[in-house]
Length: 154
Image (tube, rainbow, N blue to C red; front, side, top):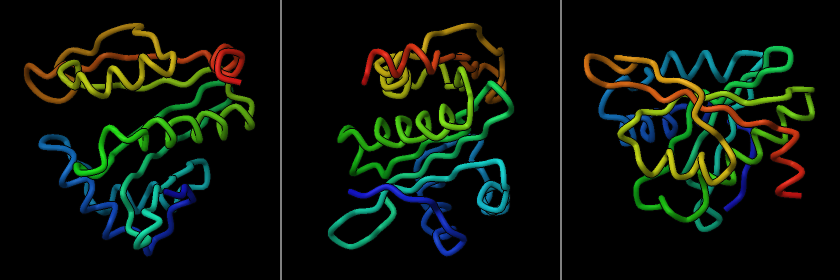
């Protein structure tokens, strides 16, 4: 697997991952196009070495000292192989290099695998957003101290 910046040509593959990965609140291709075209964002893709297929995607934004992890999606048949972890780590490196001190995210409280991934990287829960993903679907807001992250993982 290799990580790199996403390009507009990756949009169909990214949209396919999005449809596969989210049964609710899926982003439209136009939303992803906006991410790809925004100058303050980093959209990373993970590609298979075997066939160059997009097998994962993540998007990040920094605003001064705070970075946001907007989305991580990994192809279903490639989950549990560390792809999401590598995407998030690369985004954290990018954000820290731009001066961000912490990274924030929202995750569905029922998404145990994602919560385990983020917790394993050092994200800690800070609050909950009720009905964030629709009626009865709450989000857990999590934060990562980027300075502590690098001290612990360096």
